[in-house]
Length: 345
Image 1 (tube, rainbow, N blue to C red):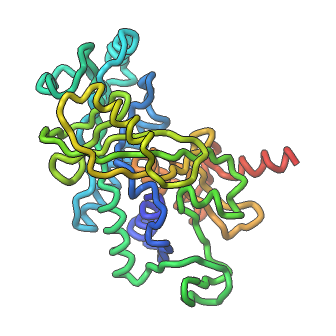
Image 2: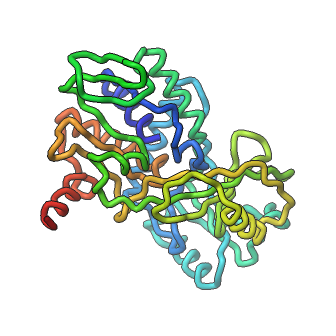
């Protein structure tokens, strides 16, 4: 997702010539993800960092992408979050009266039709400016966009030529090229980026089928998110830290099934289980910038589960930096981490 968003932004908004290099999504968390975007997260119902800037940029980006790529990707539906405890209920009601949250949170009084479908005896909140993105459809459309421009290659790159040359699975690129690593968790395995403070999180997800038709995302211990296929929903997700395999487990499936059954009162069938590794980082801020020792090696990565919402905003921020128009904000500048590594040495 991050690479598609950045590549499309560079090409469409900044009219730059881009070569998209891919391994055909052989390992890709975005291909498994439900694609939920939500400005209010966590048990404390806190507003996402930079939400007031990130979400307008996100909606602008995907609406423009839909126009250019002639496909539907973004589905703007509220997230309904039932309260788990009286304490959470009190905090949620207080948030609805907070002017800082006025554009995001309201009491979920209009979803009484969920009675008998979703168990929420304490009520809940509705989070607006939320919804989900069809990530696979978006990524395939961006791939086709670059294929049609003859700017897409599958393989591994190496700095070794005066022009772009494909030899088997190896793509030789000019020595003065700027290469941007957007390869998700696989960047943590690259020798240039391996020492960054990654905190990878494997996530498991199940796809379920039910006779109930829901438009909104339900978020209570696990999420239940619609998919492009009628009556099919993605439910997730587990968090297993610092594990990089993509094998769905019976334990993960059992955990998700148990949690979904605790509030979803309708019969459902599990039709698919999936797992992949999120490119999460310790301070929950993405990695942007170039390597101090390898100036042609750049990174645009580490968005974790917030790639759908955060990457469009930071793609513009990164492009301005890449083209020499501005500096990166300190919180996301990857050089801060290399400075710490040098200090420790």
